[in-house]
Length: 95
Image (cartoon, rainbow, N blue to C red):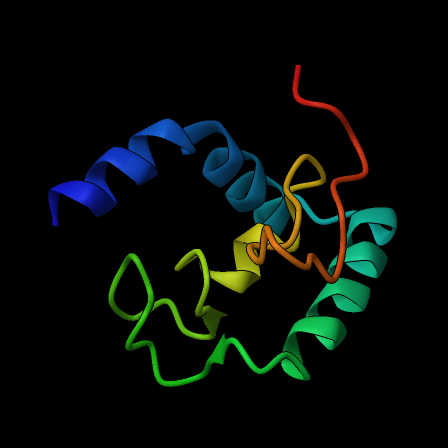
């Protein structure tokens, strides 16, 4: 539990950006999010049941990093959670 809280705190701005972009949608970000989600839906690490999600009830999520894909795919500064073999990359640099 402490591990997840630390990870959430460390990534709080990525989470905020993803939530913000989910609320205030633009065509540009939605296109990127849809493309990323399509990649994630075919990934062997996809967790549809939520067993590996950092936060309960946020499935589908990444089985590698535990992030909610609804938000992660909308944060343009985030990349794929599979650090060894990423399937998509960040588009923008962190500010």
